[in-house]
Image 1 (spheres, rainbow, N blue to C red):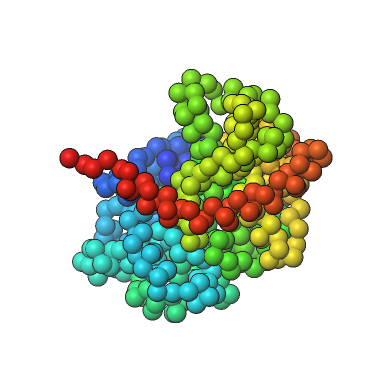
Image 2 (image 1 turned 135 degrees about the vertical axis):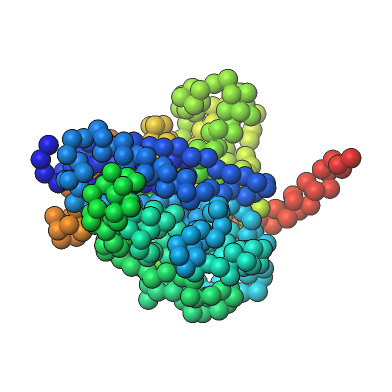
Length: 507
């Protein structure tokens, strides 16, 4: 083997993965180590940072063992990781809490409600760039302050999951702009901590680490880390990035006007723009290349198909069979609409939104129900695309798809037609790993800009074009979906009250 290599480490919710990538962006070897979520109380979700480090150590050792000479040929290491997990260290680098609350931890919901009741959006959006949600680390830090004051007092710094791996590799601490932008504590214009938000939330600014560019070198592999992992001491380690913006880069979604559809359990629709969109229904994350990803996470994405499979078929049909049934219905489902809020909405004043079928008639069959679910999710995503397009005055040029949803070609065709935008599917599904490689290649001087590296490393297979007939049907349907969305909001509190009144009394 000759030539340089890059090492990528991806700290996910289910596993830590390490990969060796060559200078063309090709993944040579990939290894992973799984870890579990800890759920001590309903609504909580935690993991042990030491498990992440053990996973990183083991997976790095594995890929190094598989490629002769890899240790000496790694020119840079880049780590990306799950967002919003709060890791607290003392002045000596020891954990002050053995577990870290994760992105999906809901323990801060009361703190979020309290903040929303006391503050109008116009007073915090310019300073934070985001709408309150239990996911943000700022609220998690408040929770520790109030519920574990001893740990809060001992903590010298609050960091994110990938930052902990960087610390174990180098002994240095920093946070990238992506993770910081979704903390609810960073000013999006200055790309620095907001004294206004820190004071408003009653937090200690001294506990926040320096914010640095993702492509900066945070430090070098220490002798101890070299012994632990098999890496060569002195190997440079980048600041790295949050997994979501790094995966956007690794999918090729890295220029203003480009979009991303990442559909798994939920569905994240993203528009790359030069500035954040300060809207209560939109979230914003700073991207690796210096733009902003305006995004909305729809809680019901693939979960809509999962619900239909269970509710209508007792899990007896496969997802492919459900999609095949949906294909039997016409575009627009003969005026049947589905509102895709099976678990509510993440943002805004109506997190208690409910799902519903509307327009159901005697002529509708199971095929209409299934297709209306796929279309309803597409309409909800289209709604947010239009909000972001209107705010930026820039039309979305194309959408790049990733996640499990790319396996349903019918659904991609529905989305392309609803968006009226072509959808591209990357050939390499490991977008986070490719994004890390693009960052490392740029940081080591092979490219002037990280966008150039992404364009070189990312290629696409299928391009899904809008169906002209479907697109026309969806253009007529979208305004009706919008009206139904708004008119339904008046009933959500009543539905909650009705559900509470009819709920069986516990003995």
